[in-house]
Every structure is written in structure tokens, then in C-alpha cells.
Image (cartoon, rainbow over all chains, first blue to last red; front, side, top):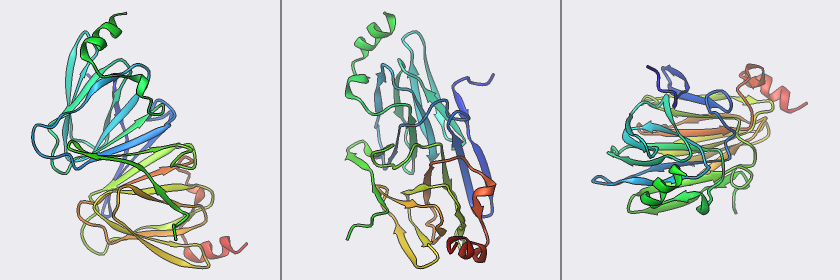
Amino acid sequence: MANPDEIILKSIKGPVGELYAGKIYEQIPFAIKEFYFIRNVPDGKIARGMHAHKKREQVIFCLLGSFTLHMDDGNKKWSVAMNDPARGMRLKKRVWHSMTDFSKDCVILVVADDFEDASDYIRDYDEFLKFVKI
Amino acid sequence: MANPDEIILKSIKGPVGELYAGKIYEQIPFAIKEFYFIRNVPDGKIARGMHAHKKREQVIFCLLGSFTLHMDDGNKKWSVAMNDPARGMRLKKRVWHSMTDFSKDCVILVVADDFEDASDYIRDYDEFLKFVKI
């Protein structure tokens, strides 16, 4: 069964390399206000993320290498192996998430529907559980 | 002298890796309608690009590895070594551009102010010179 949170980019693979493209309101379900990318995550037991957003929605892509994306909506927990540049995952609001198992060459791209705002973060897991159960 | 076409992203480097962020109307001078990324460009004498856009404006970033970006506005030609993820370059409309010298690990991200449109491309250099001299 297709994952409803999966985003499939348009891809072109040929003798001069691979290109993956996403358009707003077509592949990406919102206007992009901010993007960020992550690289050079050290080897070892590194975890990133460990927060939820009250309102901000994002889509996350693994451009090179691999990592594992863990999500938790307060009722269920699930993990996704991120190793295909053409397949992004929606990181919806009110979802606790973390990232682990970064390959040395891993490059991650995230596009977001709103600007960074410290007050939009929930960084305490117990507070998150209370927030999603309201 | 600072290059007026250079875009400097906000960067955070720490024990869990490097993060680079760009916001529309702050680092990026337009609303992003489309993005695309390029990877796995084969070793050797590969050149990509070799076109100009009539209207579409873009910003190009080198997320990992390196490449050389060549630009030509019909009056002057210049090249930029792209090897710093924090430093993007504007790829303005009416600029003939190509990319060469890709490192094996090179990952490129481009954000654009409009959707892909075949009629917006000029793929013939002589036609480009005529276009920009009108």
C-alpha cells in the first residue's frame, strides 16, 4: 500500500547524471518559505531531530547516502529507511521525529511551509504527548 | 569585493553535523516555485547546462563536493569555483551558463522562481547572443 506521506519527485537519469525535481502544489503540498540541508553528520550514535512542531509542516529528502527517519504521532510510532533521492516523506506538524543511522556521505534536504520559529518547537517528549492529546 | 550574485546561507556547524538554511526574501530573493537537485554526475569531461533562460531566475548551491559554474551575459564571461555549501550563486535570467569539473560526490541544489517551461529555454548560443542584444 502506498504511504500517503510519501512524496515522489520527477526524476531524470541519463549519461550526464541524475536530476530530481519538485514543484510546489504538485509534489510539494505547500509554498516553500524555507529550506535547509544537513551534511557531514559524524559516524557513530548520532541522533538529530527529537522534537515536534506545533504548526510547521515539512518534507524531507535524502539526496545522497542514507539515514533512518523515526516518527511518532503520540498514538503510533513508525520508522522509514531513507535511501532513495526520489522519495521524500512529509514531516507533518504534531509529529515527534528523530533521525539516526546516518551514512558518512548522507546529504538531507528539508523544505518547510513556514519560517523557523523557536516558539513552534516542542523539545520535551512528555510535553509533546500532552500537546497531541489536547 | 563581494560578488553581488553571491547568496550566503545561515550555517550551524556542531557535533551532530552541519546545517545550512535559506529563507525566501531573506537569503533567496524570490518565492520558490520549484527546486531540483543533481547527483551522480559521471567522472570525465561532463558538461551540464549550456542554456539560458528568458525569464526564469535561479539560485544554485553545491551541497557536497565541487564543480565549476561558468556564466556569460553576452558581454562578459566568468567562472566560479563552487565548493562551499554556504555560498550559493544567483543564476539570473538571460545568462548563458554551464557546469563542469564535477567531483564524484558532487550534489547540487537549484531553487527557481518559476516552473520548468520548455519555451523559456534558449539552447542555441548564437540565438542567445541575438536575444540578449535586442
